[in-house]
Length: 423
Ligand code: URA
Image (cartoon, rainbow, N blue to C red; front, side):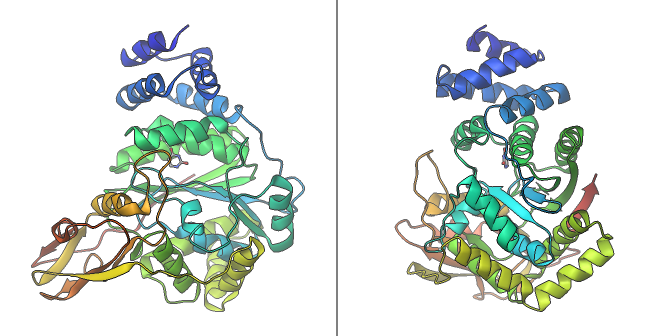
């Protein structure tokens, strides 16, 4: 067996066996297959896809590449959450403390940015002192003590995904159903939670643009999760325009804090309450309606915010966000309704300005970001502000930012945010 032979086989659309996939993953992880050969394999998967059996096998192989976390020392049902990634997706920062404040234990390992989509760990690192790396004992003790922990993947948890994910990020091989499904599910299964809630983003700013592909991904993941004995629910959500108003790391943390204090954007709140009620219902064994009421109460009475502060302080963070970037406004050059905001273009622009990575080892600039002053459906006057831009070392063209907004005379109806729930 050799990698060139297996790449050709995949390029011809032939199904790979468990042993062949294991050969590729194991040899890439231990360095016997180099980045350029692995990239050829990933590109072949992007082009020819994988069957459900191949995807399920790939998930098991990745899962077995490292340690599996045993959360049995934490009392109660542990519920995990994951998003396939979007632009402005700061949901975890609001959702986790909310769910924990309702009494559900959440031990979550999060990722870094991938392609044009942001990552929770990069966002958390905009909080001075916040420790994203916790050893396993500290992680488990913290969940037992305060009900929630939010950390980066430990070194030996799914090392195969860690290495492949970083390569996919810079080789344009992110948008593939089997690669996304195996990456997410291997991590979720290794993280040890009893129940899994997945936010599958669909649209321009998501890894998958159309509903059909997103449904296939959701069905793959639900099937893989349930077949490993973990009840899995997928929520398909719209990602045509950015979620909320802030895009970037520090600005997204600020928006999350505002949402926890009760004055965040309505779409972010709607998503958090939808996912929160599913997680709380699974965790406490209560109805979705009861769980929803509990989530609304805890968001409104400040309990969720208190839990967030407790989480930040426990992980060594100080809620003093200092953003000394250059700030300026982008003004509209015409009046009309905003009918589209291109989440993908905004995600790419903010990434290039320093909020994400273009190369594997790039350093992120947490201060870079955008804040939308208008969302789809809003009316804008000529010379009125469309967005604020926070820049540090790089500059961008105003025209490129203006191109992200479509302004027309008529506007019919806003797309729904929550598209479907698959169990
Ligand atoms: N999130 C992940 O963890 N992996 C992917 O491949 C895509 C999104």
